[in-house]
Image 1: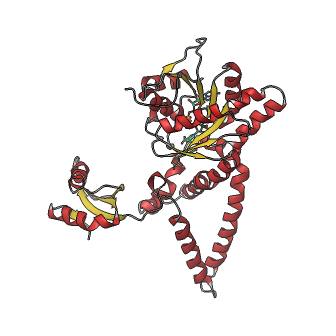
Image 2: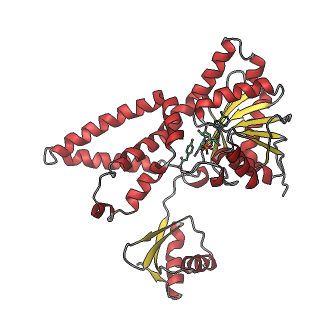
Length: 371
Ligand SMILES: NC(=O)C1=CN([C@@H]2O[C@H](COP(=O)(O)OP(=O)(O)OC[C@H]3O[C@@H](n4cnc5c(N)ncnc54)[C@H](O)[C@@H]3O)[C@@H](O)[C@H]2O)C=CC1
Ligand SMILES: O=C(O)C(=O)Cc1ccc(O)cc1
């Protein structure tokens, strides 16, 4: 398939894991010529097999217009520097989750004379705020970046051509462009990505020795808050250590809040203790309400219509078809199974103005709507 796009190939993707293969897949589908390279021949072959591009064979030369480095953060600066040196006209972009440490390593190379200013001007950092808990090319999705933020971090001497290319990749992949400096980026992701990862891992680690009967009671609250605890430790060790300065500032604040909470709960009957707890909860409500909705839209509270379905093949598909024929858009969907029962609860989030008519529509068609 070939569609209108801004990126001009050939594009060389170095590192063909989850992110590199997803990017290759997205650009290949638009008709851009994509070459793939990875020290793991298996990762490169799998990426090729899913349609992310063509493996660049050992010793084979290409003249890419754009190089995208999608390697782990630890090696990203080295791979970027090699690409800037080897391909003397290509724009080089990296998509690692941290930006400041990579830029600092590249600047150091300039200071040492290992990289010229002209070479550094062809580099721009980027970061798609899109991913999965899985790694490797087999988990790649061409639409991974659609409607997700794509941060472009131009540095003081990035050329206009390099910034344009980094932006064009995001636009072609359907992402939403955000421009930040590397410092602004690292402070922002420490708060909205790295801290949630640590919080989720800390929370889930409390479950390691939990008795089976306690885990059997787990509901969506626990599943929601521990989802990203399943992330790849190899990658996250690198992300957290590269952005430790920003993350530690947030953890100091958390430590203060935790100390305050522990103090309150140690004596919940003390004067002011309940007010303290109420404040904690309402501060949480206020923070949660500030998280933007889908596609960066303002936060929006949806109404949830809950339907009980039999746990048998085809039920969900029938329910979704019914919602579609009611002409109501599904904003979010989740399903809960109660263990030991052969029914499931489907929670359908819709715009608040549409829930009453959807409930009536489904009830009339004999769906078991929870009133
Ligand atoms: N996983 C996620 O959700 C997100 C990851 N990122 C960033 O994308 C980059 C790649 O992450 P994933 O694709 O998730 O990891 P991955 O583990 O799925 O893939 C990484 C690939 O890099 C290759 N690699 C290792 N050393 C290399 C080297 N020296 N040169 C070239 N390739 C090398 C590996 O063989 C592997 O195929 C990382 O920098 C990560 O911070 C960015 C946004 C989201
Ligand atoms: O799954 C999620 O909620 C994520 O936030 C995924 C993610 C992981 C790492 C990144 O650098 C960017 C995005």
